Length: 293
Image (cartoon, rainbow, N blue to C red; front, side, top):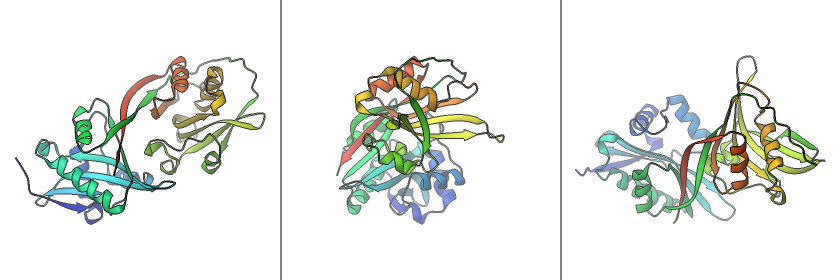
């Protein structure tokens, strides 16, 4: 059954309507991404989502789909990120998703976007096929990891004199081995509440990490999430160094801390091996896709 759709921008719609269509579209999803009005607004601010250029599809006056989009200026081009595509289950298979994607891509072209990016959970074959039909291609796989919550007593012997120091994110950006090409939510611009660390060996920076940490009402550390982890290239193969660094970032000597890795690129084999050795396991895999406009 085909529907005569009309489109509005997110900026034209009341917040309760946006949250409603988002939650309907993600009902029964593989992971819980349901939102309240407060968390929806926070997502928009944290991830730099643009209400003027994000699109809602309507069947009459009833919202049936939404695509949230963010834009960032790269070194020489503008790029876009799909921050969530939600289609009402009753309207799937009716052409709504394709019409909505076509509308979104026309917005990108009008805005002068050079490259569009998105992620999809690797088992969500229906969504991946939709994106492929509209010209997106797989560029890499991303993995979420969960680690042990109990403390670990790890003694590592090496020749480094290591110090792990908390720093402003701007200092991390100045490192020669800083990884600029990361998934959208792992970029420094999305980590507005992030905490940065630089690993020094005798005052020489040799590694960095971007994390988020949560604390309870008594100020005790509850969780650590890593969003970026980088090591000076000549040292990437040093598994003992990586294990030591991860031990410091995750405070692995302590009990009762939830330890997570968020959206980590599978290309970093050396990090994946160190995580496995420390008892981390994969929870979700995503495909990272792009389309040249």
